Length: 419
Image 1 (cartoon, rainbow, N blue to C red):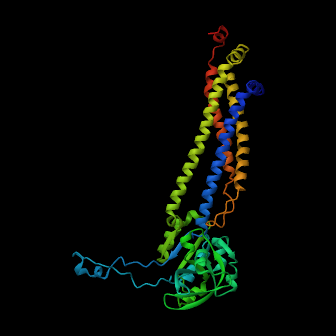
Image 2 (image 1 turned 180 degrees about the vertical axis):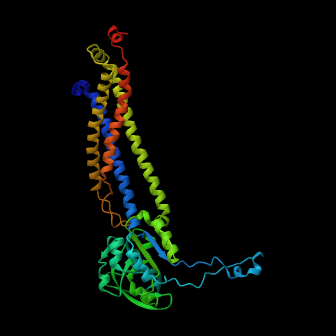
Image 3 (image 1 turned 90 degrees about the vertical axis):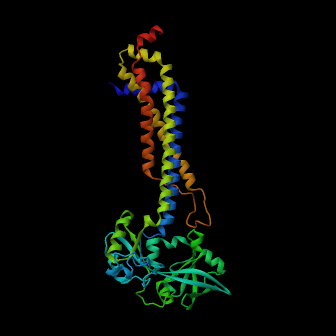
């Protein structure tokens, strides 16, 4: 069969009913365009939220959890093994919060080819003194260079330069909410009192804002050595180890492995953010469900238009069959019409969706709670455009297939007779 002739007849049919053809193509255009806009914006939003969480969350968090002993002293006495034992008010073991042999563990992790980086941390509970007021807070002693490299801390600095912490041993990066409560600016000094009674004067070198008010009101960062001095401990005193992996999918398995190997509590990123992951999954399901529904609705519109077109072209179908075209040829003609509508409308839909997505991406969106976000988030992933055009062709193929089968079975003699 001469396919060029098939497409020539299909094009002639479409142009002879130009208004209907344009309406059908626009149905595909707006269906695909809306799909691109919706899926790009929603996945961009999810990606932004993921970034806000994952940027500041280690893939694996190692620490020494203080908890009661699973076996109490009474359990070790065999003469009471068969008796009923009731123990009240179980106290935790006399363990230190510090991680034993933390520095060798960090060296071991850095040598693991699955690990992108591992950085130590010391958490110190303190009071920020402002006149007669004492504000409860947490100072995280960190290696600022590793914190910037692995967890993008610099992206959340709203004022100042975090690298100044390297040059200032007694510097501190305050949470933005905490800085407002203390009424301090960069260069000012804040008085910090530890739980053990020690007093320190620290210089404010930057302000940090995570976008979560509860964190920004209490959290701050200082050099690792400053936090160790506050705890009256040596250079080997480490309370937490934060691990960043090359592949986040290894976090769950590796956390269990490290917990058993070093006898530490290891929390992977999925466990730490289980509620967030559940919400993210639900948002994705809603996004794709609505997007696919739009495409299916566009497909039904094309089906109705092609169905009506066949009824209007009964005489043309009879003439085609009378001049030697088979039923299969007629079916191919109408399916090719549907595919032409799908391809044309799909391409226009991709262009329309991309244009609106670019417009959204350049629309300012600045809120105080999200200092790193300047415009609405949009995900320009090529896969969505491929899915859009493929779905347009598939939807229009099936939308044209069923009317084409009916056209294939039309008896030209009955049409010519007017029955």
